[in-house]
Length: 264
Image 1: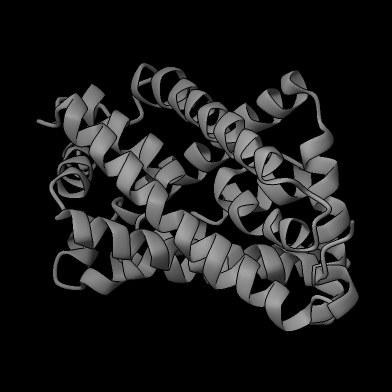
Image 2: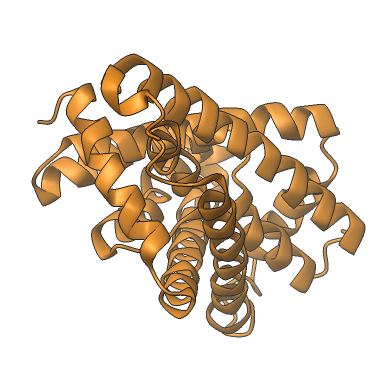
């Protein structure tokens, strides 16, 4: 496996490749990533809430089941080379700190990828989940409505803190995937931290682009204002958790001193 310092070296080249992509390629890869995360989301709903008798008195069991299958989304993102906003929060920071990527390139990538992720997540939510009837029957209909209403009604401070926790875990998963060199390595690296964030109930903005709209389409009493408040606040928390707690901290600890110095 790659060492922490070697992971940082890898992110430098990966980051340059990401910001060098054309607008159209970045957008398409972002739409794919949003679709993958939504796929993991509906799988976690079907499996996690599919055993109501067993989970009624065992709330940890539902979290366990959902957490075990949700990581499929990140596994697909990593193995298919898709562009995920939350992963890019961390991956682009070492290059920015090494002065190989400009602030403008970072912000441009984040903006395009966030929007593309939303498009992909909404497309899967509408066409392959709600309109295809996956959430029309019980217990899934009630479950997705409750999930959406619960997420949208969280206090802002709670959204922010849970957003930090979620992308701390997700970006650690990306780092672990980067440390591996085989498919099995990368799957295992993605799986464990993402399982943790789902089981703990943290908030991930791209996952919420599936869960909240799906609940709204099924009749949840969630306003557009509540949707956007959740997405924007959780996005801010995700940036802190990914860019600072993983990207910046890892780069500070492991980026070679000559790389971190400003080159005239």
